[in-house]
Length: 371
Ligand code: GLY
Image 1 (cartoon, rainbow, N blue to C red):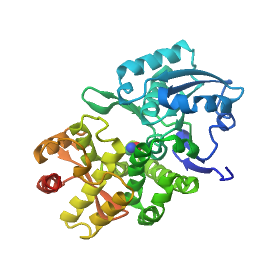
Image 2: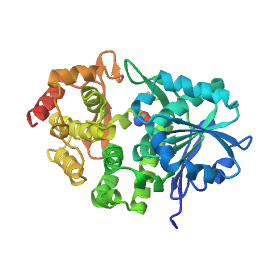
Image 3: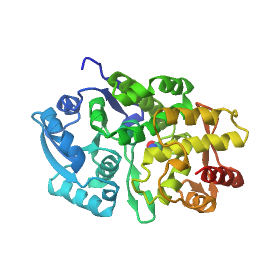
Image 4: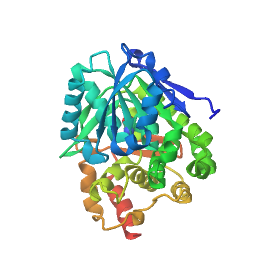
């Protein structure tokens, strides 16, 4: 507990905020948040699983600050119109005012939904993210993407609404089931692969300790990932260009998630890891990166005990054409052309708008044949 917290500033003019990363932040939540409050009252939104583990600690940490709490069902199904309108109505019934703060205590589902509710409530109130999963700490809690799913696809309804503060308490990660932790690790590896070869090499060495619970290594990894995301979001807050780099592996991932019905056959971060391996395979086939690079990516994922190949996904998958057509429904389609994040090396990704679909089909067909 002697580990000092790190602070990463996300510099976005009047929407700037700090991401605090460290141990024991929940217990200090009142002190961390009090500077933002116009009155000692907040609304806390969480889900059943996270609330059971961490809500009491947060309420104790808030001290004298009064908290109204809403506990939603856990799971992706919560991220839809029904729970969203329930949440907004609840905030109104609790008389949450324009200058009040909404706190999202949970993983990506709660952060996205509560952030979107804060974005529309009284045309926008401030919110604080307290991410409880590794995926939320390194990705979804930072950068202001908020929203819900529609019957037409995931995250199709939403708003950019930056939080006023993010408290990434490393201790919360120790309550995650191993599979959820490793799924979040897929997003951590993504940062090394997209823009920092030294970080990837550091993960190759330190990943196993990090997975085994080393809090210092976890803090270093979360800090580096958040720092990289902050710099990208500062350059391109609304994803007109560079922010798409954060989608490395995601075009393949979204097709695989759709093919597996967004079920627990494939968690999001698992799909990102497999998607990153496929993106490097595609880059190599297009002659962009060295022959041995995709194997190095896969070797690290395998060392971590992660899903790495299509063969690691249980059950049937569509054929290569079926997966291609699922990719075409991805919201990253621009004028009928699929945008892909490709790489010239580990740590050197770029966005390509004109990828040869026959090569994508070839990568998928070979990956399916290996099942
Ligand atoms: N999760 C990708 C982004 O925030 O842009």
